[in-house]
Image 1 (tube, rainbow, N blue to C red):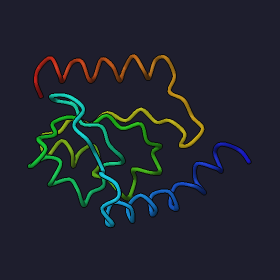
Image 2 (cartoon, rainbow, N blue to C red):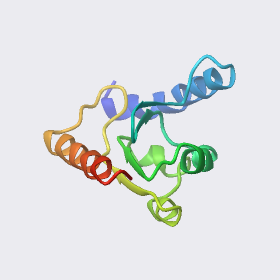
Image 3 (tube, helix red, strand yellow):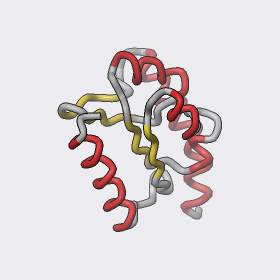
Image 4 (cartoon, one colour):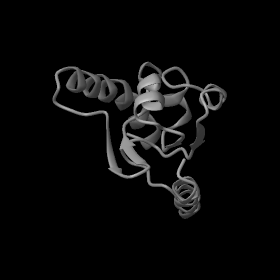
Length: 118
């Protein structure tokens, strides 16, 4: 099975499983790993207010494929309207790896926001 097909076929069952685990209290959707950095799953639109208002998120680095973000998360413009900068570096789910360029871009994005305490 190609990685393209695997990522698309596996996405919704995986998302459904993780949403169910969160609702059952068996899983957290995100964790603060150090000041100014939260690591978590796909930032669903239904969680946006919590992320921005309670967790103080001001920047989102997403490693999701574009089809994963299209209907489930705020658009780049919607993030911007909430005062959040969003960078998407798409990586194929389950089997993909970020390129060296994506890693460098992501690290720079995180560094810039942590340095400015945003």
